[in-house]
Length: 265
Image 1 (cartoon, rainbow, N blue to C red):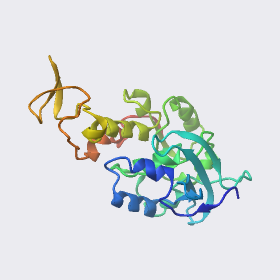
Image 2 (cartoon, rainbow, N blue to C red):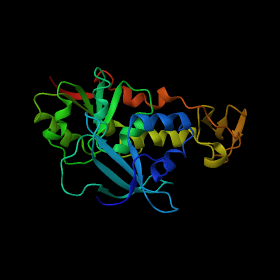
Image 3 (tube, rainbow, N blue to C red):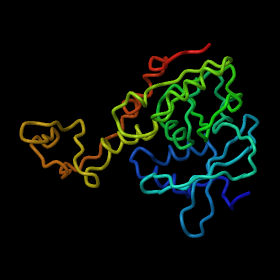
Image 4 (cartoon, rainbow, N blue to C red):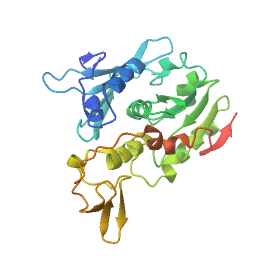
């Protein structure tokens, strides 16, 4: 064991980061803790670092992935495992498989992506490998399931190669991150970047050309104030209501594997 931890805890930099978004309210926070097992390292009076417990389909903790991150920006600095003896681990979220037997599995690399994406209305249950070097053995629990992988940007070809090595899995690889023009390395970062751009309080972030504004010949015209405004001022003091379905439009394009390539059945 590498460090002292709390098995379940909101007191970590991951939840601090999520709480900076308007859509992440108490209901979503409580729902996440019921869905996944997220703990915290003990840091005295400071906010701890998140530990994402990998729990198997027998509801037993196999290992925990500790992520060192900035609670204000979400930037990751380091990572490690609670058990450092090289043991095999299961998929993060594997414990959900017996609960949602008919749901398609969305597979991503890091646990934070799975957790964030599970907050939005998609047709999937979200699981993560927790590591980049994935083998067919790591995906053993997914046999018999329909799976859509959402590789990080730049990882599409490598996942397609992995796909070709697995013959007993309905396994599709989405290219949404290769096609998107929105910033971000992961699909969660892509969705959150849209949230920051469109849905932050104007008093804090300034005018971000929400659906109440458009570019006119003399600058940014605010349809809420019915006049031109100085870009960045955020004069309307408006905090937009989150439209979760529109935020996840790029994700649900793969709902029927329309954005996926090379199915294996």
